[in-house]
Every structure is written in structure tokens, then in C-alpha cells.
Amino acid sequence: MHELRNPLTIMKGEIEFALKKDNSLKNYKNVLISNLEEVNRISLITENMSLFLKYKNGDAILCKKPLNLEIFIKNVTDSIKILLVQNKIILKTFFENNVLINADEMQLKLFFINFLKNIIKYTSEKNYISLKCRKRNNNAIIQIITKSYNIFHEHMNSYNKSNKNINNEYHSLILQLNKYIIDAHSGSFTIEKKSNQKTLLTVSIPL
Image (cartoon, rainbow, N blue to C red; front, side, top):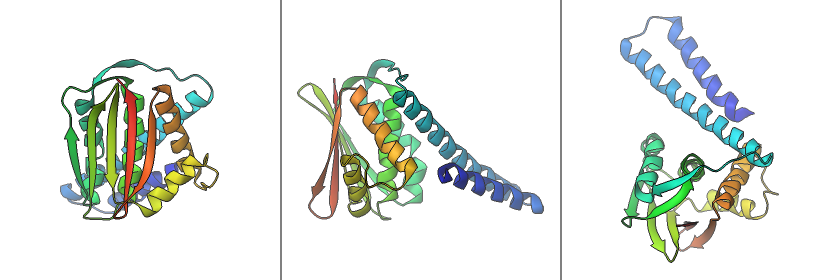
């Protein structure tokens, strides 16, 4: 699977280059920082694949606990801060106070990281993503507005068509895993075409 091969190839190339000649401490540090980013990518891929197989085999277990939605989402966005900086994207957030959900923190974090990484990937540089969290009736509502309209919207439409049009095996796996996770939490999400080339993703999770 090239999703694993790519970061491993990058790490191998950078380490081999660093070992060919003496480098400054700064250069060695840059190699280590880059390798850490690739290790984090591999870790996320293996977490996704492991959890997907558990759901597929009926072995997935939810470990629900009360979560403060604001603290939880801030923890998620901290995990993708490097991607935001690298792509020169500003994340605007709004949180209604004291929104509590009962959820599996690890699984729900994977759900949001997967979605936000896709959104960042298809959002042009020097743009912004808006994320709002609030209560509506007996649900927590998380809304993400982005200008990653064209490619991202096309991929999400593929998801709504049971992944029939998806060529990327790993991408298909991620979309199915996200559905497993949100269904296990009795939640839902919708994707809407908005004006000005925007896409609105709405996630609803019972309180």
C-alpha cells in the first residue's frame, strides 16, 4: 500500500542523505523533525487500518466517557496544527459553552482527524476553515465550512454512493471507517453544497 510506502521512502532517503556527509546540528535536527512527521503519518495509517479491521470483523468496542466538546475538538485541531501551518490555512473556531457528549475519545478523534486532513488537503493555500460547535435539541452539532469544494465534494459524493466510484483503496477504507465510527455513536453527518464554492460538513452526535 503506497500510503505506507511513501512516508517510509521519504524517511529512508532523508536518513541516507544525512549519513553521506557531516552535517550541522541544525540539519540533523531538521531530518529528525521531518522523520517524526512521517512516523506520525504511519501511526495514523496503522490506527485507521487496525480499527477498520475490528469493525469489519465485529470486534470493535466502544469505550464511552463524558467529553467536553470544546476541549476535545481543541485537542483534535492541535494534532493537525502542523498541516495547517504548512498549507497556510487559518482555522476559525467557535464553541458554545459546556457542550458535553458521551463518546469514545480515541475513535471520535480519528473520525475528525481523517475528515480535517482531507479538507486541508483539498483547500487552497491562504484560505480558511470554519469550525463551529453548539447544542441543538438533544444533539451536539459540529459544522465545518470550507472552500475545498471541487475535489473534496466529489470524494464525499463517492462516499454517499457506497464508495462505488472510489479508486483509492485506502481512501475508501477511511470513508467506510468514518461511517462505522459515527454509526456506532448513533450520530450522523451530511455534506451540502453552499454558495461561493463552499462545502458544509455537519456532524451530529447525541448528548
